[in-house]
Length: 100
Image 1 (tube, rainbow, N blue to C red):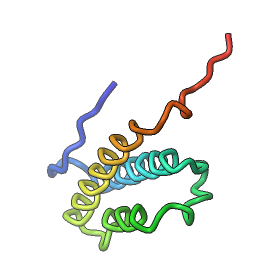
Image 2 (spheres, helix red, strand yellow):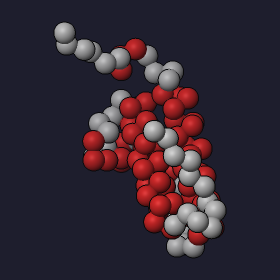
Image 3 (tube, rainbow, N blue to C red):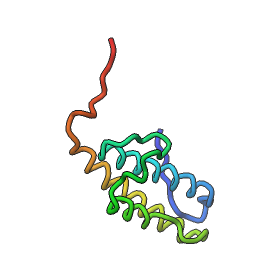
Image 4 (cartoon, helix red, strand yellow):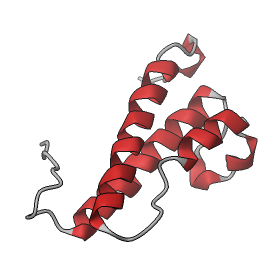
């Protein structure tokens, strides 16, 4: 089931914040995988290249107002799109193995 998230007047700050955090976590996980790092619990965050970390800095919230949260969420969605397109180019070494 999908839900469309909007930044309209009926969307609560808490909902937008939760979506922002979940989206940022997804983008970070994709970046970890693309660089062959352990994605669990952010343990290897310091091993991501500086240019990747700089891109994520733009997605941080600078204040607690609604407009800033919407801006940060939009930046984070762009990160997911970018990382997913780059991760798709990673060789087949990431293919899952299935046991019969």
